[in-house]
Length: 281
Ligand code: PMP
Image 1 (cartoon, helix red, strand yellow):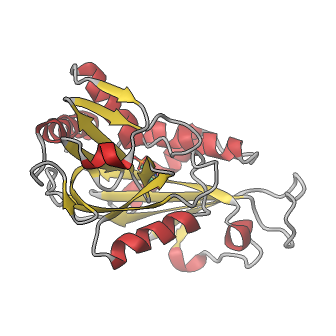
Image 2 (cartoon, rainbow, N blue to C red; image 1 turned 180 degrees about the vertical axis):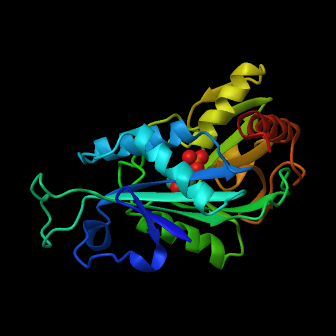
Image 3 (cartoon, rainbow, N blue to C red; image 1 turned 90 degrees about the horizontal axis):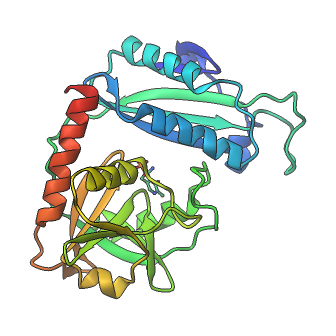
């Protein structure tokens, strides 16, 4: 595989990370994951703009434009002959002797991107298992920060319970998954946490809400409680990697009949159509 390292495409073995890279020492950086279907970026602009927004929110100057990154990333996809997979990219605040304060402005951010193949497993996925857990994270969850300790701890709770995703909550109000957004369906209306500092505004979430708007599926951006979720008609989670997937049990309890529901299945189909439209897979 090849790697984009500060604007150049290199062999993986030629790229070395400095022990004083601030990403390595402090998690001082931001990242993105973009899905590639049929060799094409899905929602590429939305992801690259979010990368820029995240960088801005941590006062990091990005030495490239969205268009420049996009050009490089497309070169990487063709170098790697990637058909189905993801691009991971990250930007750290650069290499500088370790001290908490930002380095001087001459220190350039370090940009890295590489691809990973994901064999295409079919779109309409069966139901997943969720587990609720306390949201122990900081209050800037809207930033796609490299600091993922809270998310990692939550995911481990899920894995140790044999579940697919941890559903985090603050005092009983559901925020989001450890690496996904969570929505419910009540009286046929999709309900999902508003885009605030308490969640990452997922691109999949945004695409899904646009599909709701375009296809007259009622939705509200409102926080919901664990109790509402447990009593909901449907629960689903969304991310670049899981797309739109039903959650059919939570904390060992079935949601409704414990099977994927009609709103989720409709959204999965619309999402598949959107992938086809953007990437023609
Ligand atoms: N929330 C968190 C905490 C995440 O890590 C992710 C996945 N990156 C998401 C939500 C979903 O975001 P997206 O749909 O852009 O992948």
